[in-house]
Image (cartoon, rainbow, N blue to C red; front, side, top):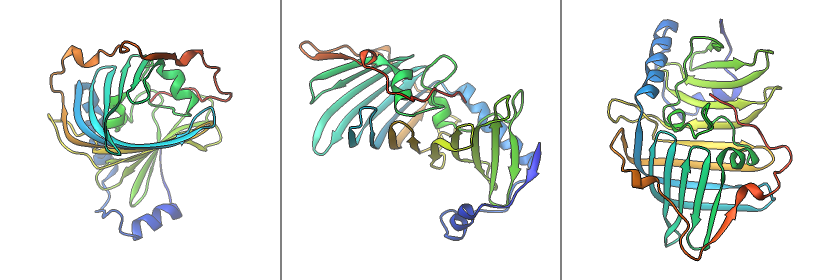
Length: 280
């Protein structure tokens, strides 16, 4: 179903402020074709290697707040990801994180602690939804190649505007689940919102413009905002991004160093109202 819509006031203010220069909107067939081509890139995505800059802040399920700015190296392949935090406030090698399927392992180097537990449970406690695939693994392809499929079962309703196109997915009961906003002139994904049944955004991800590597067009970064039992703000940008480069198996091995305290995250009581993951 396709309908035309009036640009919301917020979008109008964004357009006239000069934040993004836009050209004439694509026709509906050309828009669909470009999104389809971008969505197909996920099938060719195998691995990612890049430098990164990260800023994260939030409040955990226990009510404690914290913030971190750091840079380092990210390596990912399939459902595995290794993230090393190497520079922050003059410190070197501040943390080492491994995600392998639904398993999370993290070494807080200066804190002398090693955490392990379920990735899906840890994310749910922090109100992060929509970032896991059907097997409960981090869906990195969907984060760096965010264009979704627009056809097939459960296809979204499209709303074409002069500056943006919106795609809205609903549950079988008719409740809104996810909204994706595209630039009307390029079909690039601008943002994705994961919604509760009332249409309120549980989590929003906005995307930086894409770059090119190995015939793919991953984004240069993304910005995640989650509001739930816990609050999370995460901004990540990539440097020297390389897609589909060979990755050594040793990149995904992380064990507790001798003498480090090991903390089982799954043994903590789960915070009430933790959000369940939602696929994309």
